[in-house]
Structures are given as C-alpha cells and as structure tokens.
Amino acid sequence: MFNSSYITQFLLLAFADTRELQLLHFSLFLGIYPAALLGNGLIITTIAWDQHLHTPMYFFLLNLSLLDMGTISSIVPKSMANSLWDTRVISYAGCAAQLFLFFFLASAEYSLLTVMSYDRYVAICKPLHYGTLLGSRACVHMAAAAWATGFLNALLHTANTFSLPLCKGNALGQFFCEIPQILKLSCSDSYLRESGLIVVSACSGFGCFLFIVVSYVQILRAVLRIPSEQGRHKAFSTCLPHLAVVSLFVSTGIFAHLKPPSVSSPSLDLVMYSVLNLVVAVLYSVVPPAVNPLIYSMRNQELKDSLNKLMAGFI
Image: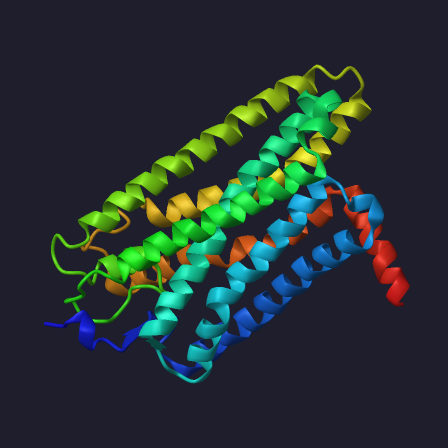
C-alpha cells in the first residue's frame, strides 16, 4: 500500500524494453520534434514578417502554432531523454508540471479552434460585418480568452488531481503524465470529485464541438450558394485546413479517451494493449502539432507565397 505523501517520483510507460527499440524511439522522436518546431516556427515567423498576413485568420493561426509548439514540447523531450538514458522516472513535481502544461495547452488549442471556426463563419456568412465583428481588439480578446480558459481549466484539474491520495503504486500506463493515469492510482472512491470535473469539462468540450459543427453547416450552405466556381474554391481553400486540423484533433482525442470496451478488455494480451495504448497516445499528443503546419502550408496559397518570399530573402 502506497501513500501519496511518500511518492517522490512516477514511472512512465516505456516504449520498449530492448535497447535497440529504445534508441529507435529516440530517433523517431528526434525527427518528429524538430520538424514540428521548424514547421510551426516558420508559420509564426512568416505571419509576423508579412504585413499582408496581419488579418484575424492568420493571427489565430499564429496562436495555434504557438500552442502546438508548447504542446509537443511539454511531453516529447522528457520521453526522448528517458529512452536515451534507459529510464522511466519522472519526478512528482515534474509529473505535475507536465500534466498541467499539456492540459493547459491542449485545452487552449481546442478553445482556439472553436474561435477559428467563428472567424471562418463570419468571413463567409457575414462578410460585410467581418471588420466590425472581428476587429483587432476583438481578436485579441478572443485569443486571450482561449489561453485563459485553458490555463484555468488546467490549474483546476491539476490541483484537484494531485490533491487525491494515491495508494496503488506509482507506475503510470502512459509515456507522459495525464489525468486518467493518475486517477487509476488513487484510492477507491477518492477520484469521484475529479471525475465530476472531467464530466463538466467533457460537456463544455461537446458544446464547443457542437458550435464548430453548426458553424461549418452554415459555411457549407453559404459556399454552395456562391455562383462562381472560383469563389467557391477560394472559400473552401480557407476553410478546409481548419476543418482538417479540427477533425484530426477531435478524432484522435476521442479515440484515445473513449476506446470501446473490447479495446481495453483485460483479456487482451498485455503487450499488445500497451503497444496500442502508446500508438493512440502518440496519435493525439504528438501527431497533430507536427502535422498542422503541413496542413495549413499545403492548402493556403497566401501562406505558401509569403513563406516562399521569406525563404528567398534568406537565400
């Protein structure tokens, strides 16, 4: 029987037991992590450098890239270090900090994606009111609200999670610290308070998802009424990257946390379940921040042109 007051460190789930596979994991993340930083960094630099991109859509995209850089940086470096040095240890304070940062940045990103759907809705469905509804002050306020919502949400959940008594060991079933894994270590019935907060957050998240869906239904109806094919193509080209990012973010998160009973059944082979758990975790925590810059740079001609000009200036 463990007591949380005596826990000074947690043991993260290892990607592999053999040294060769550990180094392979390190090498894969060593490729993904700098690529994610480079891609998001280029988007931030391009938007900040090009005056033509100082619009609400690109302002929100800049914030999205900042959040993506923070999200992947909160978990990948520690995982890489553990594989390189053949260890699973993370300190109690380090685990709390990692959980807070990841939850904060992921929550803020989801809120920002909701704001970005509103931006696209106004731009396409109410273009004459775009400058009024999305002025510079309104954009700053909405972005700040997204960051503040994520911060307060993460602070509340982190403080509540780490206030629970832990009596089921210190081994986590994930390669980074997250709330469901900490709750599994808590004493019986002591996790109900945090579970209630998770339900409230889930309802809030569903509300954001519903808002995004309704926004895009209205956008689709408006786009289909555009008489020219060129106009429809331009409207779709500004919406598809955001819709793709939202779909990737939401689908991987849902699949990770709402696995069907057959996937989490104790009858499954333990090794296979661990592998599946790791793959799903990578899909929703590492892949979106790395892929988002590629999605936006491929589908947005304005951004590609500005990026080419920026790169040409350095050559």
